Length: 479
Image (cartoon, rainbow, N blue to C red; front, side, top):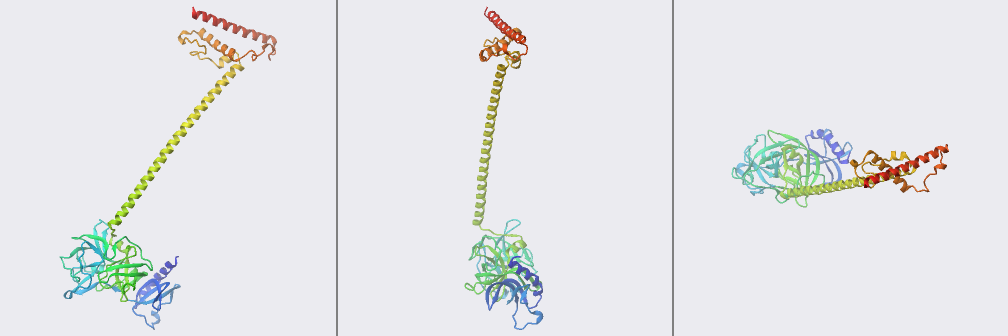
């Protein structure tokens, strides 16, 4: 387990018992303070109403929890709306009417609760996740105030405390709200005005981020304006009094904020509830809703807010264009990539075709070579076997005999075809077999000399008969 996760785990295992103490107001994970100065040691922070020199044994905070050091800090948290009696209305802070509507400005309900009117801060315009409509984000305790709220309650910008009137300055109506173990939020519709995905004095919103220890942050609130701070606590569980009808609630996994005193003494104050907290890149990390008298503040993690209210953070048109351009560039890159793939595939197909052609050519050459070898082998057979068997094994095409005189199949009788075959064989023998290569039949390998002489006479007679037949045929063809 990572060191920070180990501290969070130890804190979570002990916070339920710690929060039962009447003097404990919160438990978190954050840096340990010594002599009022922050150190780099991460500890379990225990917030109390008042630090005492002597504490009853049963209420003492242990020095360590599961081996993790503790740090006891005097701090009491409370909600940060602004409220006033209806008969005592006077401007307190930003009283401007904004069109288009932006974040960081005054907003409040038209309804009166127990003779009081309320004001808070419009955090930023957001988008309804269900239909994409523009909504305005703030806190539950700003827009709803208590359990008497209803969908359709009118909201005015600026708030009635800040000179807004109903119905003249009504900017929308209450749509959804959430008061859970981690979220204090609400959204209203927008009507009659435009909107800008930006925060006064901060600029364009660039999305969302997760708060981390020591992260530099800012917010713009209706009361204190633009303030700077640092994330000093995470995994903060805090007890807060929501008044009659709701009572004390414990919100967990919150973000603890301390002011950057080089800029401002307080991070937030009454009337700043509903401000969104942003990092150095204008990415929203939280929704401010409470603080303490020492200038520190508390915010809901923005991811939990978006989920609970079913909304999406707004994105500026320039950022949308960048995203679209980025997608377009990716599409173009994909098309180029596909085009390269297609070209590659076409080249591969061409290469395969060429390869097939080469194989075919090689095959044809091989076949020609084999045929040549067969012809050579056939000629050799005739040379080696110059007898009747050679004629039987190597027949001459009766349609196209070797004899250049080829009167055609219809003109040839059976005898004429036979004569032509004999003539072809005779011509081959006389052409390729010289006298020096002809076998001496008189001294052959035959065991019976008379048989050899008889065979020789027969061959001579066949040759004579063939010559006579040829002469007769030639005389017949010419006369």
